[in-house]
Length: 120
Image (cartoon, rainbow, N blue to C red; front, side, top):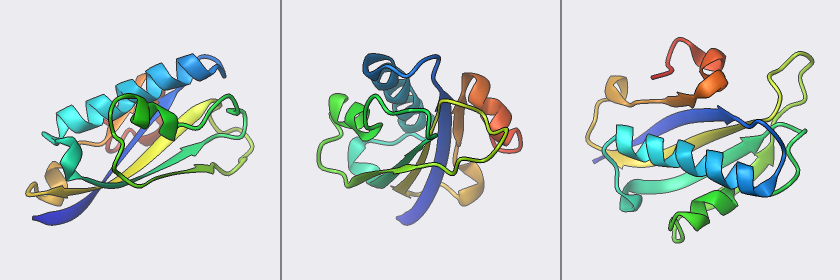
């Protein structure tokens, strides 16, 4: 079993804790499903949020969908002029037999514009 990294992002419509929980949970669920993973395949997950998101920690959404024994950490994304607002990004380290080229990176909604080269 190899260690792989999988990326993803989602843009929120507004900075509200419930909305963040819903959108981040959808992103994590899609990432897990599209890569044929189980929660036990997750090694760790890094979340970043743009500086305009302050209502909650994105990692709380992972705990809310039952990912309770995986190390999670949140950080603030760089405040780059002109960057897409209200974005939560994920970098998950996973155990997978899939070749690196077969890893499905997940960019939901408008966030697909961030990485057109790898968005699924």
